[in-house]
Image (cartoon, rainbow, N blue to C red; front, side, top):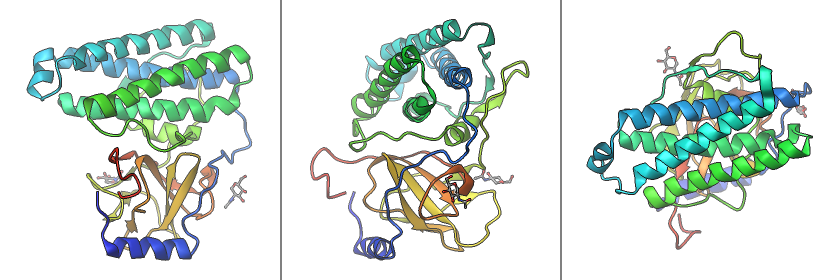
Length: 300
Ligand SMILES: *[C@@H]1O[C@H](CO)[C@@H](O)[C@H](O)[C@H]1NC(C)=O
Ligand SMILES: *[C@@H]1O[C@H](CO)[C@@H](O)[C@H](O)[C@H]1NC(C)=O
């Protein structure tokens, strides 16, 4: 993707005014979730993935996949992914025991095999961010080891979808993106309709949804939308890797997407241009994926 001179200039201005900085995205809340809550948080996400694959593979046949120009070997791999998710569910249920949460009801956005593919990519990628972000709350070494082993499989699945199937970048940057629990929950709650009231309450809340125009690319100026009151200067924190790049949000709700961004990025509306903690989050995150070529990595 080429970047126009105009947007490079805008980014340069943002950089000069100190708006593009890398900062850790740590949880500000002092209330630390218990280990069992974290395991149930992981189980909630595994139930969600399990339901997505069960429903999707019932809806779309091999012929539907072929008609959508997907390769003949793809659907069988999704059967394997579905089995992995089902195994993650039963594994976590076994670890948690009686207190294990039950599945919720869901409303998935996929309407055809191609949107199944892109939703699957999003779910697996968010799964990686959820496990890496939640790791800090685990202390039992068995749980740390097994959740690391699950995280790695979700990363392989995410990579397989984006590179082998979609022929795009297999990874983002040198670091994947750990997300804070509430940021993960905001993304997950977009597809959760309701959960059984008997489920253990989880110490998470969803921020208002944030939406970017379809096809938004680095270097473009785009209009965003979210349902929260605007007070004072707001920013878009583009969380990627271990930090975030900040850009100011205009009063017309437009933002210049930094042209340096590559791969999966989670934009969040914040009242700060220094940190992306819960206490400064206004809306989001949402999920953006900026494909980049295998050559000329610096020339987006
Ligand atoms: C938000 O929380 C962080 C971390 O605890 C703290 O440093 C910061 O001052 C807080 N910001 C606001 C606006 O309350
Ligand atoms: C904001 O609310 C309106 C009206 O309910 C809705 O149509 C729109 O999708 C919402 N926007 C976002 C980003 O959730």
